[in-house]
Length: 215
Image (cartoon, rainbow, N blue to C red; front, side, top):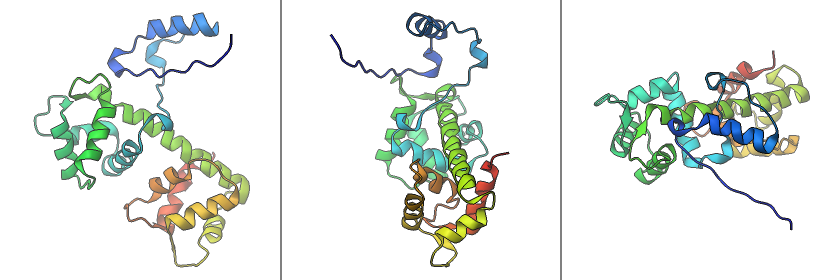
């Protein structure tokens, strides 16, 4: 008998059973976990989130210094530590988010995995976990550029800005990255550095990648 068993497990952060997860790790991986839960750095993979969530994530990160601040901005009406769908829609619209309500509903459902009808502050922190993955994409992309062009990002800019107009359209970016042979999630990196969301990356926006240079 052979085959592959696949499944997906989803739960709200406050419903995590760390002790049971340690037990499963020992039972099936023969690995005894001794790290306390307080020291675990929870992570969310890019493939686990719908594109609507990624788009909203990048928008919020440009509007607030961190996701605790973003939650406070959205929960500014009653400040009860929870967000209803209506509050999320109104809060995002007040911040200038122009996506339709159907898109925001997808974001809401993602952050309300237990179907409770509200997003708690703990559930909202899944965006922080997802942001770690976004930044990891940027670190990996810049490490690739460093190996290819050296530490001078100007060399890469000269390579991709072929028409010399001082801006990169998404098409220019994707084509240049493809020619270089980079197969990582470059679209996320482009969205990350398109700081004003104009759909074009300037040189000043591009050099923000310096903060992801290997140290």
